[in-house]
Length: 333
Length: 121
Image (cartoon, rainbow over all chains, first blue to last red; front, side, top):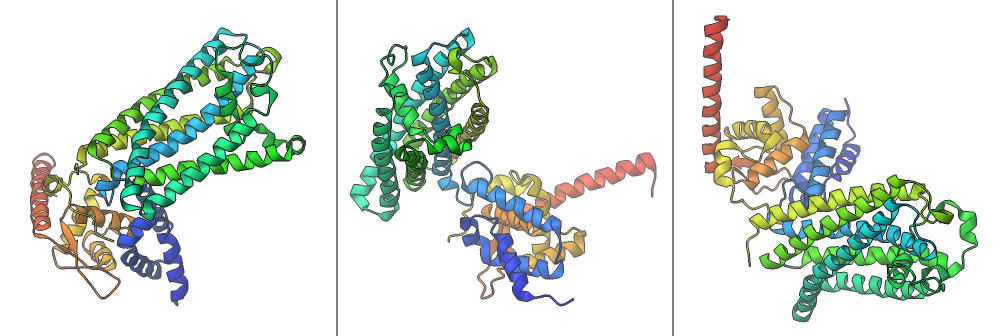
């Protein structure tokens, strides 16, 4: 049978893309040759494609710091920490969106069931604990990044730091503008009558404005002020910029064993706070009934957000577990 | 990029292939094939298919190769060709000898018991 060598090589290259770049840098050339030989001998083999996809994805999971055999065990701790940062950031974003909307709702009228009231207290405590854990996690990373920048001025640190600074600046400016610009987030005379700080909720609401069911109602969205719609597009980009920047920083900085242990401990506290928040939000969702004037009404978006919370908590938990495993084999500098 | 380094677990792995999980079988086949001499990926696949009647898929083969290299049981040889050959190290040879001897003990015992209970084939 005549085999088109160029097409076989193209197929082999495509198949090898299941593997991460780091793995391909190490084994890519020889693996490609093996695939070319195998494709020439067996042009159509589903089991081969599935085998390559499976092992490639497992290699990607390992490079992401979420477990499995790593080519560079010395980098595993930082990678797991970066994976935790991403998962926790996703959780915090969605959690803040839920908490802010409910808290703002409470400023207009209190929840009418004990379960929802309890859920609000639990979520508020969890948000406070999460915030404290995030700050505690960020301080050593920020100090290390600044020290690294002052010493070496390497682009490896400058680029992610630039991403973080740009994202944070956009978030602070936009959030400040919108948090003070809507009556429901603090400007209303009824604000601050609740037991939770309306100002914090207003900032949380403004920074997660894009998590909205209005995307499914474009007609309603067109009635919004253009600048608000623009912010709904801009704030996820700003958030992504901060998260990607921090994750890249964490992957590139060299942590001492002590800092790695501290970050892991904060990760455990953070994951526990996430679990607490999940309990609170699940309590609110399963309580089910709409509150007065539907302010605590549960929509499809809330159920979807709950699913995202569960998935991101599972990822964060896995990452913390992998950080512990990496700390066991970490050789202190 | 630098090849993966040998880990602290090498000595343990030499006797039990600990941590290989589902790749322990492919690892044994690869070591047995390399006992004859250095081979690259495709040559390993064909040789294993010939003597064990098992076709190792490329992903499984390279995961096992990478683990064996990480444990220091095999090493790659510099080559002008893009097909990089691998060879058994002294540690790998010892690990294979120990592993096969343990397997032979189990096989001998099983065959003896079969013969005692079920008679000769």
